[in-house]
Length: 443
Image (cartoon, rainbow, N blue to C red; front, side, top):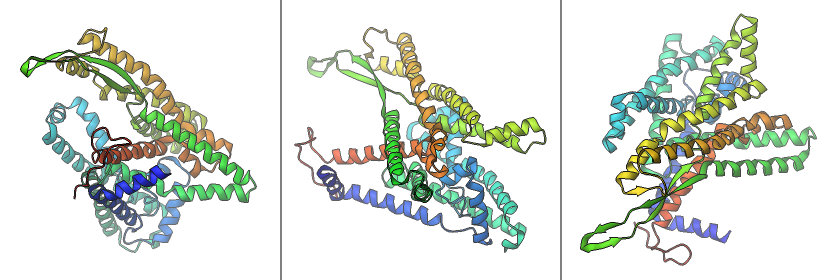
């Protein structure tokens, strides 16, 4: 505990780091405030009651509501949140595999990155222009016309302008946090939206256990312990790596001094694809659910089965898709051939393996082997909410036991802590750890 308090003091002493953290917290507070500002021209109490009833059943709307921190169900000006930007980023990333222009930009360094960001921003607006009308149509279908105070065309126009502006504003906040604050801004905004739902979900679970005499506080304690164990497993899943030993040849430098060959490692992540397989699989799982409105009884039955995100067949197919997409996304994001070529050019080699093609084949083989257990663990964490809900947990509390939400929280927390640690280590002399002397904070 003393070490933790001392770390907090060290963070506060370093003015640059303190300002970054305060700026990040300030921007997140602004985003949460915007989530409470309703769309103009509607009876907000009627709209919120209808939307909250719709999202309480889970499914795609429930997930969207969780990722936006409840803004979706509150008919907020940032009801679509940062999700259009996430969708645009995924599209641009996938297009970078097949579109030569984007491939060229990816190789152009900082200038190429800026152009890709600009393309992502414009695509975000385009996606918002598609999702916005769907959201407004949903409101029209849920609430009576008497609860809308603006005429039809004017309500559509104002709502589209406000929703698009809200998404652009959320995107701007995320980019500013990344540039001026600490951590990845877009990920932090998603995480803060998920965390915003945590207190109410936990309170509902406590009330359910206490009032219904369903285990009481002892059961709550057991559930919290299991939840902490799941978080621990998720941390290992996010941080686990397979280190491949690399040897660098000796080099002769100026003055005929020979630099002794050094040893290094190539870290291959157990879960190199992160939460992307879950996002891809989730997107596909929404398609069968649309069949629930079919007039054909057989198709309708399948659609209803896949509309239940806690059902057996839904989670079986969901888990299989996650395993498949784990291999797919790892294959397109980790170019083993390029890694082998870069290693060869830098004078490095894996002991016992020839540089070039043999090295690429070995890296690909190891990556395939470690991706299998990684994808299995990822699939288990993703379907864990459907498993724990059978033990009497409320739906909102069960969603925090796994899935995209938990992995996002763990991944973002680890990334932010690592950035804070790097700032702290930069204020110490070499050999710091326990005995180093702290440098003066840079004003």
